[in-house]
Length: 305
Image (tube, rainbow, N blue to C red; front, side, top):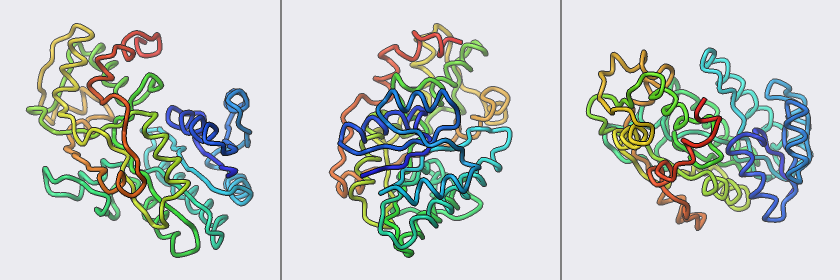
């Protein structure tokens, strides 16, 4: 297929582009800058200049593709609602371009939204759904609804930690940076709340499989670790950078973690059993703790700064 990919030069997007190219697909990536365009061309993909705000550009690129994977999101937590609105408009625009075509459209969402709607401790599944005001849920539900308009739409819910040596600016690097700045690797309360996780390369393979064969209207879970206790994450980080590990109260979390304060407190155990059965997807790479223990998060200039 000729596949249009937004977010194609990001952490996960760059891995998805490589996965698609290795599988024989052609890739056209959305590029906001000359640097991004050059990176795409170096990888063997084409560049389509534009941004999430260029709706005409998104429509044009989607209409001329055989399928679309939407990974881009404005990670601007100073205007999170603006980022959410831009994401929804992008999904609507791409969906309109694909309407009635039967082409695949894979949209990115997150498992953390389930923590807002499920009873405490309940394992989240692909069958669980949410509604506003849960963050980002309108884009997910819009994507699923496109299946009724002749689009083979699917949603990949990613966990809060998509980890690997490619992860230079995600939540794990942020936790490491915070622990260095504060002199303590913290968890909230007893730290028993769990985060699911997946390796970047396993996630990339799931996006390819979703593009190739996910049934219309399918919610998929890209989780390998169903739930790693946050305290274990904090202890592993603290040991590697040589700072103590300690619990803090929920009231102290926002001052300590910044925008991660709420997310660091959420319990989000999440299953991918149905996804694995449906698409024959099996996570093969190291789990979160093993990947942190490998050391790459601590030995690069990007993660040390």
